[in-house]
Length: 89
Image (cartoon, rainbow, N blue to C red; front, side, top):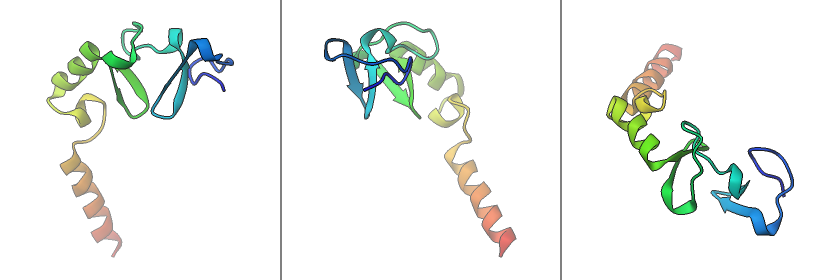
């Protein structure tokens, strides 16, 4: 099996698996601050890994998970889909 970060072979002694993805222990890092994280102190959103402090910062910057991570709020996503559907009918 190969690490999803570095694409190198992962041996059992250095293997870490979460959410169906395989990592080297050293490659399992926060995507914002690049600090090493462990299975007990990380958060994940859309295949990105975050340390708890960075995850909270991203959330608090906008007050919701969607905008904090560069997405539309769920209500805006719904309205956009709804308007697309009614305009195509």
